[in-house]
Image (cartoon, rainbow, N blue to C red; front, side, top):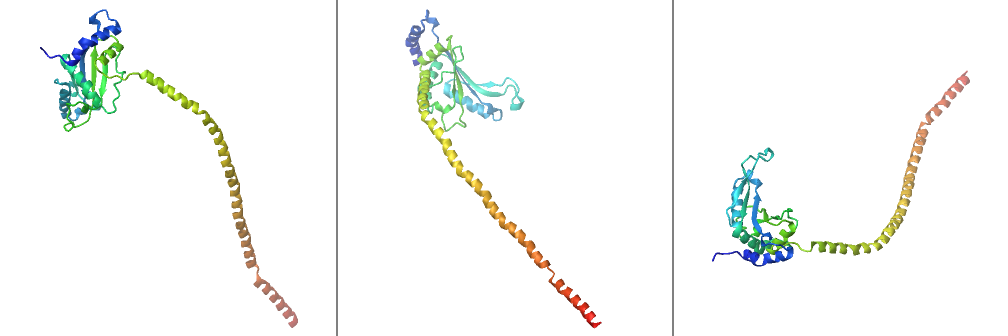
Length: 279
């Protein structure tokens, strides 16, 4: 008996019946299914170092269990020193049993090793039933030896389904074990309700706002007195300067008083008187 992956058995035995009941399909062939999983990784730094492509090829091959291939650039970009045909990325496409095996390992082993993991986002659907998921670190996969990697890097994982709408694709992937963040709307409502009580508690804060200007005015009053006192001190300081200026010419006048000249004038009179007396 040939080997059948666990998720493939689960899909055929339980997932199909649950999807038929939920979406009321008329035919089993209308039930959406997972067609392929594409793992891609961009290596822009490989323009300067071609060894990075080899490391990326080995990592993606170990993670997926299938030989990965390098993706080539389609045109020249002078600003990035890129020429047409240079390897700039790595990709691998999984189908059939390898696809289910990778999804099983990804859900049960890799995602629980993500730091602060709370579920994958439900906003990665493209509107046609395909889901895109980004991984920031390749070390979440147990196949990667952290001692042998040269750089922490991420990758993109695309789940391609045959669903006609995002709702059907999301239900299919969640049935296969992909943990989406649930009750986002209820969480948003709860957060809105939680924000309302603080708004009511802000009413007494209005009183504090009214009191704050009173305190500011009371503090500003002594500031005005200080402004009035400052010029008084300046005037008091300027007053002695004026006295010094007035005293300086007084000394000059006292010096200018020609005591000697006054003494000389009576000497001349005495000479005249002496002359008259002599006559």
